[in-house]
Length: 295
Image (cartoon, rainbow, N blue to C red; front, side, top):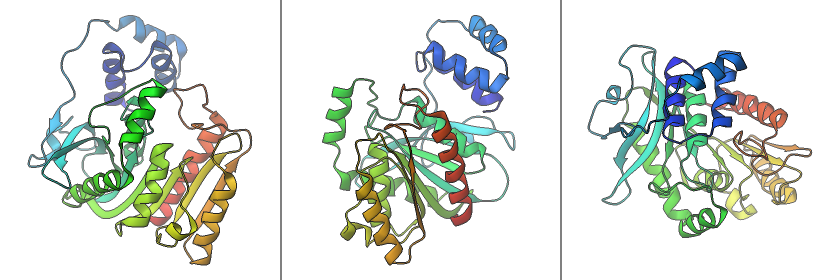
């Protein structure tokens, strides 16, 4: 997280996008001092900010989002054509300047395109990727399980994959993307990672975190290398993942299944009680290594 992202963290706290605890945890990590983080918190005004993130139309130059200085992090909401006549939206992050680079599609949990998913996109951007997180709920974000379940049930897998493909197609037209695409997702998004890998020829690497695994017949359609993560305390069956990965191995598709002992569902989400720091840090490094190898 650089200076621009720290400013965005302040803004998100001011408008209620992150809690006081989340703000202190992230600010401490950036500043290296809990005292400095608390000082920054005290300096933050709690007055609401009515200015939303900038929306970039697909016909406009991407540099209009964020800073225009070479090397600065660009973040914001982007609009792009959908599979039909509707316009879709997502959150993207990338560093300006340099050579064209691979893109990572970041797929949300069932909560929607919340601050955690945006933060994951920024982490990939900090590693040199172009990251785009499609807004599959079209503006709906929730913290209530019943509402999240309702939204997830209303989202058809085929429509979601089509919207993910639309995000990929949009990035194909950006001169700072080199045409290689990875996809990563969590919970509901983990399952959609696998569905996208089984249906899109544009995916060169896939990383599902604790999503619904593919059946062996569906897995036979996957050609992109797959790295999967699951915890032993997750309700998802590890044996189903093992069967999927066995199918990938039989087809000669590079793959790895990492099962973390004692980790719960959503162990990567550092805003929830299920967060497992050791598993999350290891999974993050493995994810970066996987994308570096295959993208």
